Image 1 (tube, rainbow, N blue to C red):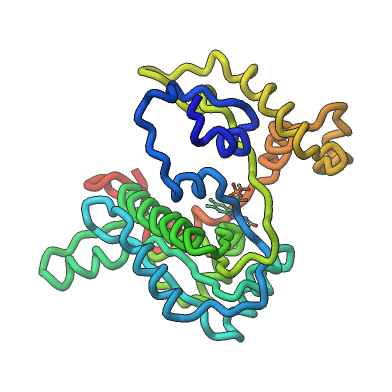
Image 2 (cartoon, protein in one colour):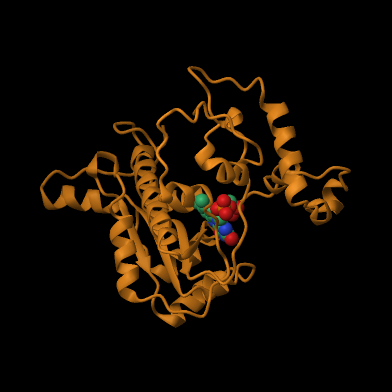
Amino acid sequence: MAEIYRDELRARFGLDLELGLDPGDEVPDNPWLHRVLLRRTQRRYADRPVPESLVRLLLAAAFSASSKSDFQQASVVWLKDRSRRDRLAALFPDMPWIGAAPVFLVFLGDARRLEKLGGMRGHPQPNGALEGFFNATIDAALALQTCTLAAETLGLGCCPISVLRNDIAAVAETLELPDKVFPVAGLCLGYPAQAGFISMRLPLEATVHIDRYDESGLAAAVDGYDRRRDARHSIHDRQRAPERFGTAEFYGWSEDKARQAMTPEGVGFAAWLRDHGFTFEDPGTPAGN
Ligand SMILES: Cc1cc2nc3c(=O)[nH]c(=O)nc-3n(C[C@H](O)[C@H](O)[C@H](O)COP(=O)(O)O)c2cc1C
């Protein structure tokens, strides 16, 4: 047991995690790591402005994230204009924090810029294959999370917003996105108005595989996790769509997520991407094959 992080690991996983770190091992006692283990999403923000210089610093941190092949295929729209922000927020009334957060950024996968570079340097090359889409997505996701961790380190709270992709055409129009540029997620930023709570995670035995993929212990691991989560914070009385799924005697995380996944998200996203420059075909494969 890693004594140094015992409280944080218990908070994150709901059990005394066996990390194979004996007290005798050289486990660094790092203040930042304590904070990462306790990190949480924040959706309510204090009425305290975030200085623009601080946002720029966080963006500099975001774009310090690693980047596949140094292609640098992430971009951000910083939504400063109130009316444009309001138009975007009005698309998602269920998530008022999109309009209310002091700062709102949109992290974009940008497969376009690399194509532009090809044109500028006389080596034109389409970047609409799955590889181009995937690499741009990863770059944007890494920038998003690096921004988040930097902000949380400075005491700010964040909430990523992927719901943007549920109304992709309206979002793209609002942000004036050209072909091959697409939102990966928005990011609400501000000083938190409340402490928030730690979202317990699956045990490492369900997510970490040694030497080979092995899901033989999955059902037991999920059952145990459901029970631990329920003991800390029951959602029994907040069952999703009981008229459709019935009322479960025990309602845990896995039942909730299985029900949630029955309502598809991002409908129309693939078609929109195809209409905006992505073929998803391997390089050299004619479109449509
Ligand atoms: C890519 C991504 C997209 C997300 N999209 C939304 C969203 O649209 N709205 C929202 O309220 N939270 C969103 N979240 C926040 C998750 O719900 C949250 O991370 C999850 O419940 C775990 O909580 P935690 O971050 O506090 O551990 C998103 C998180 C990620 C990583």
